Amino acid sequence: MADISQHLAALALEQENSRQRIEHLIMFDPLTGLPNRNSLHDYLDQPRANAEHWAPVLFLINVDHFYDVIDSHGYAEAEHALLKVVNRICNRLRPGQFLSRTDSTKFVLVSDDNNVDSIIQQAEELRAAVALPVQVNDAEIALSLSIGISHEAGKHRDYLLSTAHYAMDYIRKTGGNGWQFFNQEMNRKATERQQMSAALKRAITDNRLRLVYQPQILADSGALYGFEALLRWNDPVHGEVPPSRFIPLAEEVGEIENIGQWVFREACRQLAEWNSMSLAIPTISVNLSALHFRSNQLPDQVSHALEAFAIKGEQIIVEITESMMMEQNEEIIGRIQRLRDMGVGLSIDDFGTGFSGLSKLVTLPVTEIKIDRSFVAQSLKEERIRFLLESITRIGQSFNLNVVAEGVENKEQLQLLRKLRCPVIQGYFYSKPLPADQIPEWYRAVLPGYADLSGE
Image (cartoon, rainbow, N blue to C red; front, side, top):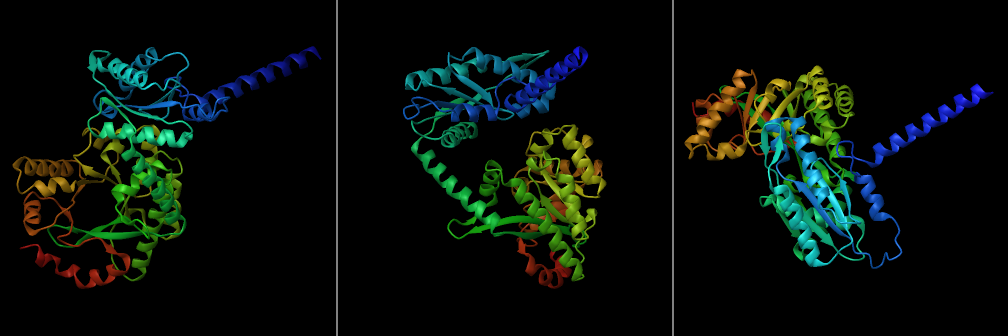
């Protein structure tokens, strides 16, 4: 009995230790040891005796240009630098304040002191604390903070977080290294954002999103290389909402993965329909957010869609941005490799505009790079841009990659790109993005004549 009791006691102790470890993982950030987003929400939502008069001040703190540090020095040194920044912030905390890490580069500080002078002093202290370079091994790393501040009595947690985020984002987009109170103009934008969020969720539920398709043409022969599937949203109230506006919103409100899954399946379904009409469509490119690649469900979702519509993996190209390349880790690379094992291509969108090094083209199984339209637009006026276009094309050839130039609008741009031996052209010179039901007519009536339009 003593042995059994001792065994049961040890088992109970082990279970309690496991429970505590799991609880710690759920509520705390593993890198910094700070409370995470779940802890922050619990802290802000906990009942208080003076709840009606409690007016917490939220400082939403973003570490500027952190991904540049990752690109230049690697993850290990970047995380070391981040820990030093966290220590400096913690050294500036006052009694009763609550600090949490809510995202890779974002932290939220909650304070009860809503005196304006004290708030300004705290913001300045935080900014100054990070202003001095961080020493990591033999390198000095310069970082700064963008701080958004929100405080208003009686407002709920989501309002405070959202408004603080808007203020922070304003500073970040204007160069960083500063702080900003949430103001009435930002309040108007926040209200619009809430309305837009609700409208976007209704559009997803009611299946009111749609895809249009822009042709990609082989520059030398005028033959069809493929189509890029582009997402569009026309709302009854807000009208035609540009992707640059609703895609970031979808990421913020947690709908981007649902949208991405729908886009991929719809592109496969449409390709299957065109196949049944005997239209020879070599490839369709689909844009996916970085958030998709953080989900372990992505490879299975792609596999199920290909199987459901009898599509070969070689007919699909998945586009990711250069910034996504910086976030690669073993899990993400593993998911990408599973897609490549299915035959699915991998394209780096807007190549040359991000922060990635050329070494990433070696570590990732890339099959295509896309030249950003901003380079094409300046190519006839700027000699340096022409050299850049030529360099990117040669890089693609060196790595045995297809190169696609976006935003080609006139014959002069086309002729320049052909001279630079850029193999694939996409833009209004050939066609604007077309609804799916117009593709068969375009394909049969227009495509054969493209060789004559090229100017040769």
